[in-house]
Picture 1 (spheres, one colour):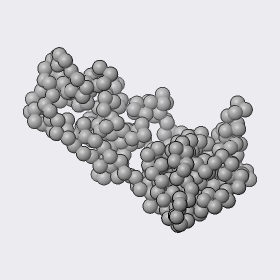
Picture 2 (cartoon, one colour; picture 1 turned 180 degrees about the vertical axis):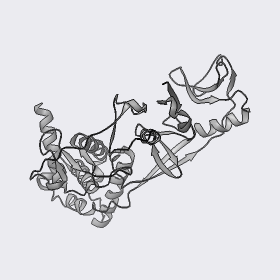
Picture 3 (tube, rainbow, N blue to C red; picture 1 turned 60 degrees about the vertical axis):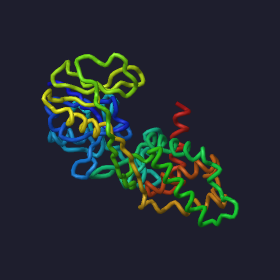
Picture 4 (tube, helix red, strand yellow; picture 1 turned 180 degrees about the horizontal axis):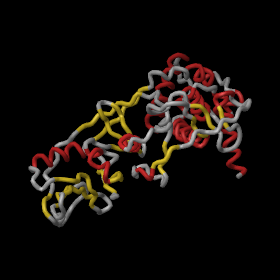
Amino acid sequence: MGIVEIALRGRYGKGKVAHVDERFAEAVRAHKWYVSNGYVYAKISGVTVYLHRYILGLAGIPIRNRLDHVNLDKLDCRLENLRPVPPPRKSPGPKGGPLFTASSGPETRILNPHPLGNDNGKHYLSAGELDGSERLLRAYLDERRTQLQLQPDETLWLATERIVELTFEGLTKTRAAWWSSLGEWDVHTTSHTLPSPHVGPNPPRWPTSRDLWHDTSCIPHVVKEYTAAGTWGIVLDNLSPSMPRRDVRALLSTVLSDVEVIVRWPRLTALNEDINIMLANRMGRAGENGRPAYLACATLAALLKAETKHVIDLLANYRRTLTRA
């Protein structure tokens, strides 16, 4: 069974390819594939579909709650590289009640009530994943720490609304909550009119960055783009030699389009109280690490429908365990 490269599109997919099994290549090529947060996805009938889950569907394999890439390469979507993540072993304990499993050590997990995707059953977020999300969001807020306080002549209500918007902006730009379906993602594609690519079996003699070359030295033809690193990366493959040049240019205009992702959080409404507590300096021990850390934990707690203190305690315990190790 052979392996086929699928050229990826959009700003984040330029020069990148996904790998699939040859038997799935025809079905995969029927759609346009992009990259988001390292994962390959397409819009099929208006629904975002991830390539690794699409492959399992083609193979007729029941899709588990979560999937892993064995070699950690999210672009490698060969069937043998995909494996289900076993559900966490529940261990009852007082800490956090039913939200938590395996109540001590780095394997602690927290229930994610709004998982991304159409998964059946419960989805748990590991302490390591939560730690990565908190660090991303905290770093974003830390750069804007002066905005996490009342400004001159600003009412508490206006300050709260402003900080809520700042937090949503942080979630969107850092993609810290990649595991949550509470964000509504809108993908807008802007195509461009491109100059005609150089056509022939050999590349242009003096290429510059982003020049295009329609390589006719192989069957089927491919189109390559010259990168800033001085290499040619495939941006369009599987072209018939008989395809008119205007059709090639139209395809290129789509492939090299810009993809703008806009995220809204209309269902995340539980932040106001925590922001009021932060602005009034009533955070107590939960605020020992500063306002950015407190607000990051409060935001993750709102996404997970948990108490802010529970998230702070889980992360503190996880980091202590790592330090001891």
